[in-house]
Length: 362
Image (tube, rainbow, N blue to C red; front, side, top):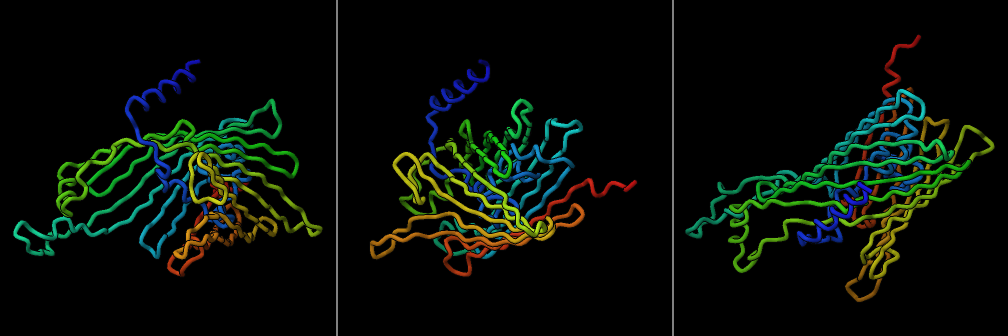
């Protein structure tokens, strides 16, 4: 009852503050982590089973049996934006104990020209008045995963995230949210459900008054009103169904997964109504003795309105490779947003390490 009262109080508090619900908010947290998962077009809600489950589905942390660490770096939009990620999972000391995880994400655009003071009070252009600033988003997450002993194959998990967003010295915000997930395994089938921002995520912005005046005065007649300083990120639901296929040659194994990513708003997703939108994705992973991995997938199916009034469908194809040896795994993914233009290709590299391999052998 205390938990229910807290949730009710939280929603009431948000309504009283008159917060604004955004269709797209904290979108940097929807980009994704781990080149292995990105190579499968983010279709890993049911099959995620390592340190990166902190992000994809914390219930998957229950498959971590040794301490693990992960790193990732990728550049988007021809190197304009950089995305960095680090995570650690701590395996339980006892069987079926709690698995803990911590992760950190930074998505930023650096060295942006600030030209709000380019022209002085006399109307003269002074390039010495141009400065640089960064727009960066940060997320720190703490996650737990636990097996439900009373139901074989069932695991649950959750993570709490603290969000920090900055736009130079113009504005900054703090946010807090919770994600929750569940996974269930039945022979070669795996099922997963992940709810992001399950309680809605709140971001509270602080706007620098001097910086706002610079922006306001830069374009006469524009930016006359301050934007809303508090915003809500509505929940998103991810449903996954995966199956593992064995070959006659037991050295090979195929993992396939179908995901449905749902927003409670109207978007350009493949399936869209006034109140709900669904974007399906599918991914495949072929491995050889769990050493070499080949991945492919497709997702981000979007309806596009063309200039001639016609409609078309765009998608994001992904491919990836991986290599694992003695507890060290290196993965690579190549993706192309909407499959339009070479400048939009993103190269993603990630590293995963089982710290157990560094223990001395007896």
